[in-house]
Image (cartoon, rainbow, N blue to C red; front, side, top):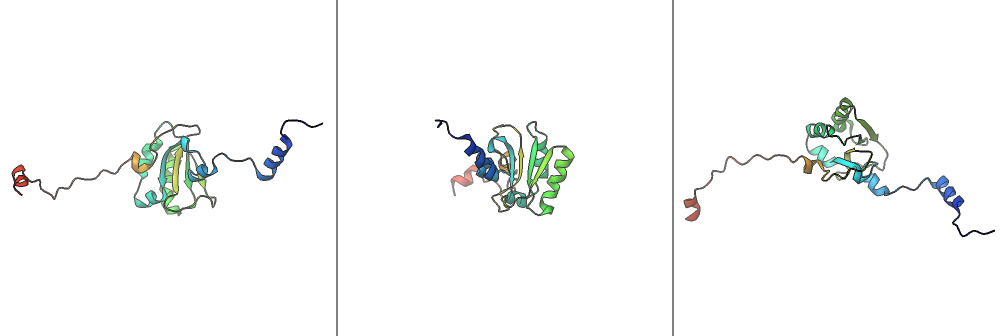
Amino acid sequence: MLSNNPIPEDEHLQNAIYGTPKVNPDEQRKYLGTFRERVGLTISVKELSSRDWTNEFSQELAQDYVQIIFINGNLPQEKINPYIMIASKSGINFTMKTNPEFRTEPDNFAIVVANKQAIHISPVDITSKYPVATEPDVDTPKQSFWKKLFK
């Protein structure tokens, strides 16, 4: 007897052969295995190489939303080791991602701080959340109003 319902055995068989399909696999790959709405802070490979972010990273780990840290384990150990030490001391769980799908190009993420639920924080980029304070130029003396006027 034929049924109008789709055959559930076929879906079960497909899942058994290929695995359960992932939701937004590209997004999960980009954010080291999690979804964007769960992310509170990201540090790209380029940002990690540009300067020391350990103070800002420590400040972020003190936030209430932080539950898990993802670290790109394909990066050189000397670059990520200070962040691993801070994560260990803070008592927050972290996961090293070493699959080849987690790349080390400058635009890829080195560190992702996240929650297990959606938190919708924006911005998440460390340079946006913690801008580097620039010192004003002290070498350039200000000109008086009259010098500007009669220049």
